[in-house]
Image 1 (cartoon, helix red, strand yellow):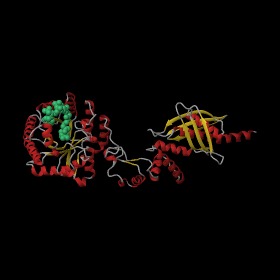
Image 2 (cartoon, helix red, strand yellow; image 1 turned 90 degrees about the vertical axis):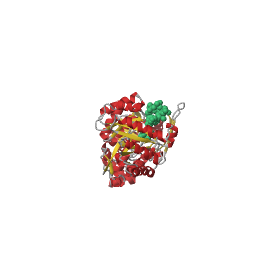
Image 3 (cartoon, helix red, strand yellow; image 1 turned 180 degrees about the horizontal axis):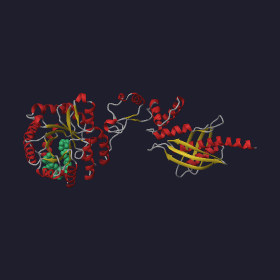
Image 4 (cartoon, protein in one colour; image 1 turned 90 degrees about the horizontal axis):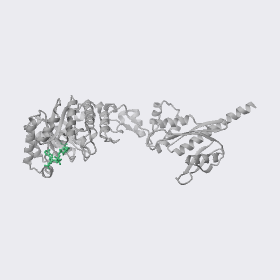
Length: 513
Ligand SMILES: CC(=O)SCCNC(=O)CCNC(=O)[C@H](O)C(C)(C)COP(=O)(O)OP(=O)(O)OC[C@H]1O[C@@H](n2cnc3c(N)ncnc32)[C@H](O)[C@@H]1OP(=O)(O)O
Ligand SMILES: CC(C)C(=O)C(=O)O
């Protein structure tokens, strides 16, 4: 299996993401984790950019032991000197020189003719080679450079002693067949091309960074450059974890692998996200929160029967504990039963169906149904008392300058639904007054408390109340995504229990007579 070297530039190109600014301590924390991940080369920064960046590169260079540490430099002596200064303490230093080669960059940015570009790059490589045995040269915007000129620059870099020549698609312009063809062309047309490693450096402007990088590997690239989570300038760089997992998962196709410790991928991704503040989208390949999560019933059923039906790689490979079956409105009975069994419940079919119906009801109102939600649903089922009164509909009118009013319809002992309208000091008070009116029961509210069962704006509210009537008291519990409905349900639950209890008291009192 061919080894593909990994050049990580999270600390340099990754830090070029707008809004990201890592201090030395944060860079060190990421560097240590990248070392654990097993990357081969680490671009720690651009020392000429600022004294702070130089100091951070210096700190990283002294700290990491098993990785080549790289500093970026324009093709200028002053930048090269800054890298020399920053990498003084490195065990295995390497300088990364670059100069743009495309007509657009030559004409508008550098204002140089082809010959000047060649001369400037050559002079820089010569100067840097006096101080560095390891040197990478990048043809910035190679993707939009004439092939014959690109070959000329690459040949010069090889003659001058570059160890790695990088072919960046700086603006993410190419597609996989075009990018792959460049590597093939260089392999076939540049003398002594096998004296250097060829490197792929892609940007994701058209969402093709990973595909382009893989195409480069198929056409002879020895090294890939990228960042963790694909962060970087504009739409970002190639996501290293995507390339590593594509090579791993499709090794029979690519015949190449990185040396990464794949089980460190997830941890590295979380750390980079935390320290850069760049949130990983849920649907991001490999490291997104949903990458190993399944929501729909048919998929969940497949997963429960055989994981390979819907997973081409295992979460354990990247260091996650397990896949997630997320219960939501698309879930089916198989996944629901599995969740109940995880929570320690083994329900008979009819009870399972009843609980499943309640779950679907809740799932229609909530994005995701949590374990706490399900436990609450089950507890509600377990403590079911005969319902004398139950809630049919509830309307509450509230305005900060108006008196809260509740209108409700209850099912009760009479055949016809009972309608009641009442005002109160607040919305809950109005609801409770309306229930008292509808049921004709005189009860005292001894306690009322409310808590959230799960998290988020759509969390279920759980209301607990204690009602008393003379010496009889009963507690009730109500659950709903709406706290006013939960309040009504709790009151009715307590009232139903109280009526039930009252019968036993009456029986006992009669027995005493
Ligand atoms: C594709 C990439 O990601 S390349 C890396 C990009 N990263 C960064 O730019 C981050 C760090 N950069 C910086 O802090 C600053 O740009 C510095 C310190 C490097 C330079 O700042 P300044 O001296 O103020 O120059 P400024 O950035 O405005 O302009 C860049 C100059 O470098 C020149 N230049 C650009 N690339 C190169 C190169 N590879 N080699 C030599 N000169 C270059 C430009 O032509 C321009 O020259 P000019 O001043 O003669 O017109
Ligand atoms: C410095 C080079 C390698 C670069 O970042 C790019 O071209 O995107």
